[in-house]
Image (tube, rainbow, N blue to C red; front, side, top):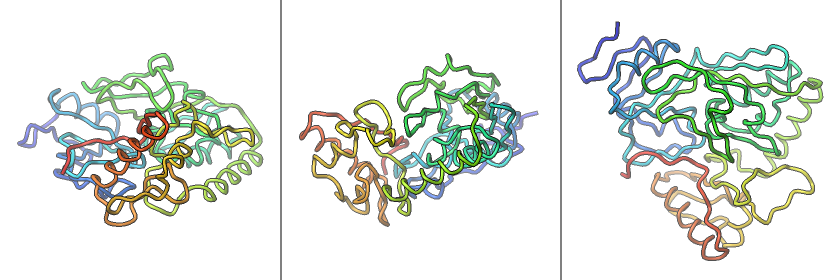
Length: 311
């Protein structure tokens, strides 16, 4: 039986925290508080909570905050963050099923050891749930290419399964219903030799570390590529419509605002050099968008999600 805790918010078997500072949960280390942070014990706990929660209360599913700016005023919503109990990874033949909280890198490694090729996930920051929601990809491969199905808890608490046709995957987008929380994902991928797959991932990591500011506080790529596809990593890859190229052409590599900077190492990475506010980061991003439009006529689209209220 669901019990209300005196605020119109249902009680849970997991963890429910009021006024949770979200800056501690995002890679950029910025943002104000959420009204509530829910960490459910299991799928049924999440379902019961959402079923009892008034439909007028917004729900925001959050992974590890690797692709997110929470604005300084925080978020008037229940933030759902999956933890232990949602990160198991199982491999059966060419099928990999993992909890939505499993890290992309862990899924890639476990799959490779079992001879399943999900190597493109190895260098993608964040969780598998986030990868599905954003149709994450690199090296010419996308989550949509291997997506088989996903278990999801809808905003009204219904537990259901989504197929590829339900997701309507596009470049860095999907049609996951508003307020729905992915809980597990099943992927089907080609088979390969584990030694070869692990060697490929080691090479990908080396290339990433050589070209991206992996030791800085960032949220991955800031803007989508105007060309509408990811870098392939191949020698014949073209750069004319890559976000970093048009940012460079606009003279914004290394640009700063407060504690925010467009990385000198990779100009499509927005970094917190220390003490940046969410307003600094988003403001610098908007300045980059304006400069790029002025110089090339191209309107960059944010890849980083921005949520919440200004401070």
